[in-house]
Length: 281
Image 1 (tube, rainbow, N blue to C red):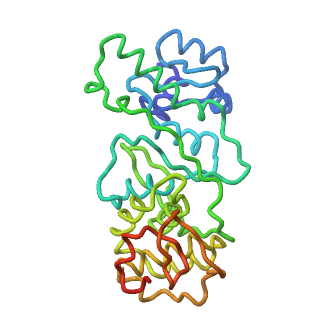
Image 2: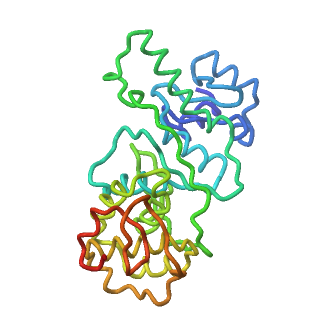
Image 3: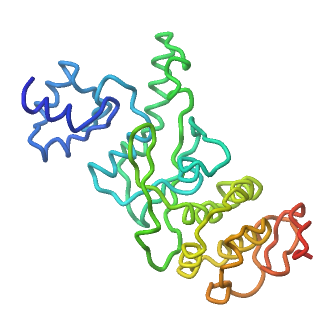
C-alpha cells in the first residue's frame, strides 16, 4: 500500500465523505483521486466529493465533513441534539429531520444541501438491485436538514456546546439547555407546541446556572417566556433557582398558537389543554 493510500485509510473511515479540496491540502491531486475511484478505493458522489467504500454514507458523515474538512461552525441542535443525549423520551435512530444550527449568512456547500437527495437516489438504486431496507436500515428514511440560522443570543459561551457520538462519529452539539432553547424557538413553525412540551417535560435535570446564563443572553422574548412557562408548568426542580428579573421578557401579549388561552403570568397564548395549571387563567 502506498504512503498516500495508507494515510487515507488511517484518516477516514468507511462511509466517510471526502472532499477534493481537503485531499488537495494533503497532497492528493484530482488525477490521483480519479485513480483511486477507478481502483475502488474511493467512490465518486459528485464533482469534488467522494466517499470511502465499505459502508453507505449517512447524514452524520456529511455533518462530520463540514466540521472536520471545512471547519464550519455548525452543530447539532434542538430535537436532534436532545435525541442523541437521550433526552427526547425515545431515540429516533432513523431521524426524518436533522436539526442543525448554522451561523447567520453562512452558506453551506451545495453538495451538503443536496445530500438528502443523494440518499434518496441511492436508496432507489439499491432497491432496484433488490437490497432491502432491512439490510441497509440507514437508507430506510431519508432525513432532511432543518437549518436554524439565528438563536438570538447576544453572546456565546463554550459551555453552550458539547460533543456527542452518533454511530461512532463525534459531532459538536448544543448542550441540553441550549437545545431546549432551540427547540422552543422553533415552535410552532417547525415543531408543534405539544411535541415540544412533551420533550421539555423530561428535562428535569437541566443546570439552573446554564439556563440562567442562556436566558439572560437571549433577546428572543417569546422563546424566553415559553421556556419559563413550561418550566413552571412542569414544576421542574431547577426552575425555583431561576431569577426571572434579569431575563428579557418584554411587554404585551405574545401568541404561540391560534385560538388558545392566555397565560396571565407570561402573557402567552397557549393551547387550552395547558390551562389546567393554577397559574393560568
